[in-house]
Length: 541
Image (cartoon, rainbow, N blue to C red):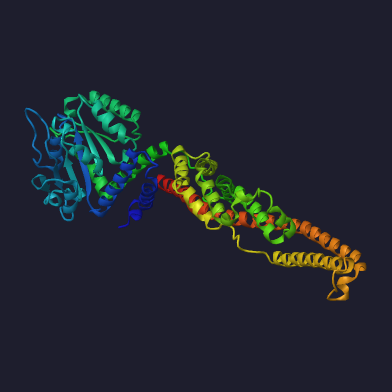
């Protein structure tokens, strides 16, 4: 028999939702409520697996209420001993109408064998309407033994139907009303109140007591109290009580109603601690992801690395596209760039990246915290803390991982653009042309002007060629100067592109790390939050 079919109210789906609440609510629910919810799930699972054809009814009450006498009166047998000097019940007694299939249920209730009794002849005595009843006579809740033995409390919490047996002198006893009745408000369908020993009252006194008791119960949250007046001594009202029990047994719903009442009570307490659901978007939007990546890039010094890369690129270009004569001349004066250690510049940049990350853990933490605060606004405090904890769940690893990732993409400083080669060949061609011009002028001066020997060719001895050679050499120097200017402009553009490439690559790495170590844990928590409140809403129906 399915739970949903049996109750008509979807108890199965509500319990499944409660299981989800327990799964998702660990660390987010008050520990006491969490333990109670887990215990209810265990109890519901156990009870629903046991005999659905039996209804467990517990007679509970205080010392001297006549509970055991009423138990015997209902069962028609002297099953539970009645105290004379000190009327107390020490152990639970059970009377079963229809023993078949009740064994496992009695074992679950932990009723001792010697205290189990079967009404095998009940059907022959006109009590077929009670077939399926398991009637329990509980220990007195206010006895000395009850102070150290919780058997009564345990069985009150698991019985399908609880019958509170009260006497005219102590029906307003605070130990019952505060400890049990008020705590189980909302259990009207599975709670019956018996005013026993009514033979000691006149009809007018009985009516007054019942009216007073009903008013007291209403004030404690029992909206529809069922009160039955009985006298175990005279048998008055016992049949009325049997009729109430028979109605519950025949319906075969008391077990489900009890679980529903317990679930309703738990949901009220959970909803009190958990405000109405505020749904959040479970995925982080692109703008927030980009904002986190930008903040982390700033925290690890990506702009500084890009700037260093741009400067290094410019310095390296001097060896390739700088005017050779100017470079050679610079060797004769102190080199202001020697501090850059260009030979080990790649290691320097890696060290720069690593130091930037490890030196700014506070900024990394601030970037993560800003994302969490922006997402968790308006959420209940416990879930807001959960989002923050999820965002920072790997905060201690984040700087190290960022450092390792960025160190792997140190710029490829050994890569030489093709246009550097072209310029280098061109500039050295100009250098050779200028050197050849110098040699030519020297030859003309030596052979043509000073007449010191015969030139190897006429062209090396003609002084008339000197102006043209001077013009040629001036042109070479002019071309070299123009080339140097053009090279510097090209280097600036190239350095900017290299910086953009490096920063873009680094930002992609940072975004990938933040996705794995920050965004995904936060999104899991946001999904958990939405799923929790969806399950809570289902369980409350």
